Amino acid sequence: MSNNQEQQGVQPEVGRRSARRVIDPRLRNDVLALLLFVGVGTLLSVKFALATHLQVLLEQHASIAWLEGASFLIVLLLGSLGFLVRRLYVLQSRMASVAAQPVVEIVQEAVVHDAVTDLPGRQVWKRRLEQELSRGVREGRQVAVIALDLDRFKQVNDVFGQDVGDALLRVMADRLIGVVRDMDTLLRMGADEFLIIQPGLDNHEGAVSLAKRLIASTVNPMQVGEHRIPMSISIGIVISSPDCRDCEKLLQRANVALDRAKIAGGSVYRFYEAEMDLQLQLRQRMEQDLRAAIDKGSLALHYQPLFNVTDQRLLGFEALLRWQHADHGFVSPADFIPLAEETGLIMGIGEWVLEQACKDALCWAGDRKIAVNLSPIQFRDPELPSKIAAIIKRTGLPPERLELEITEGVLIEDADTALAMLVELKALGVRISMDDFGTGYSSLSYLKRFPFDKIKIDRSFVSQLVVGSEDAAIVRAILAMGHSLGMIATAEGVESAEQFDYLQLEGCDEAQGFLLGRPMPFEYALALCSVPDGQIESVVRPLAAAHLPRLVANGR
Image (cartoon, rainbow, N blue to C red; front, side, top):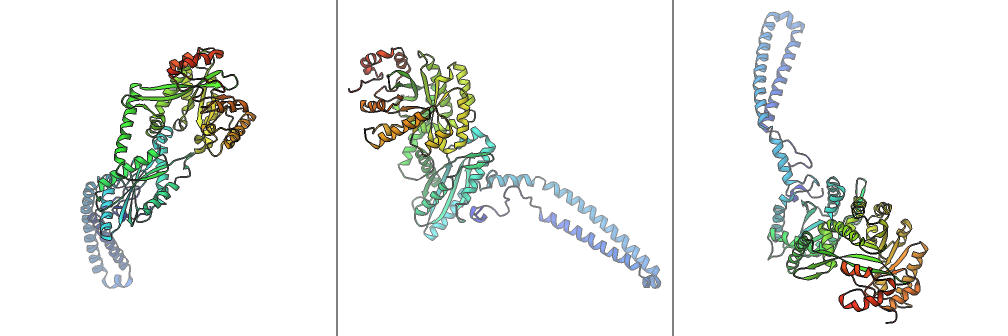
């Protein structure tokens, strides 16, 4: 890695990926002495043996040379044998004494080094930060503590397994290593959490520059085996100051800033600010309350009616998740749905929504359909088709009455995988709808590659729908394109009679919005289904005060 060992606070003798077995110096000296003695003895023996073959020695001193040589050879062999026995005994005893040493070193390495990413582990961060803070005081410079977290990493483990998750962490570590400076320290703190200690700063601009480079390094999907996994990161930053040089407090504040970054969405960074502590407490409390609501069954489904634009016939409903908090009242889905996705709670919630919506739809008269939104987190689950098939089987709902809505963002992340998933879902007999059409970057290419049953025109185009406006031209083009591809076009967010009139004039197929009906509890949706199509307006209007949908006549 780019950081040298001294900067990372790692001892030089610690190995990179496997334990180094350090041999006792005394044991090494004994072995060398033994080899040296045997070598010298062998050399002398060979030399003497060669000397006995010399003609001059044999002629002049044969008897004396033989007697002395034999005596010397016997002494040499006996001495060598005694030394060898003694050293073998010492060798055996000392080998036994160091037999457990590799285990100790493996444990020590695991403490200092992370086995998955090969980065320094959590145990060295404090020592390293203390060193940089002391140096910063001497040099009059600042140190940035940067907490980094992978967005939705838990879902990667849930969907692909821990082996793929570990491989993804190694790929991520390599990318981060390529961004940080040699003087920076990159550590893995656990799970999908990393920490960067960035010394030598004169102001916060250096930390901003590094944060931007880190985010840019994750733009392209991670190639892990046969999988291309899109992954974003969130970053929290705190800068040391004269009134805050406590390591634990700096780390805590970096994590607070990190939590704020995760709330803001993926691929963002946030600096620590004092008011973040209160906001973090509120978020943590909301997460606890959401978990409690799930356990107690306090979440509910409301249903927004969907009408045929031509004859204003009730076609079905869209299921929308609602949370009525015991103390705070209605909690906006825009607040708790992202929290559920971030924490992984959306997987269980999504399955419950699908099953409950299918059960409720069975109670509606006729063949009215039910539309259910799929979270991008759910869509990454390779088991999603089998789960939906099981729900259809358990509830008995005809699959053609179930409509699954996905956003274009799902396709942008990994189009090939997403389209393969859509093919599997389509094979179940359900209908597939592209929600918020027109707000992405490649809508036309997706429509060409996959035959959606429906496209839903985003409310941002409908809200400013005025004859002759740019939005009107866009809506007209979407309708023409959808019809030419054999797809149904649905307008969202219809809130005025003028908007409804224009959609009817341009041949829009379906519409939903506050003009036609607000989301309502199941019992009201059930009552609406029992009203004959020709009498819907006269029945709904008197019940408007009870929050039933209102079907407003054109020109009102």
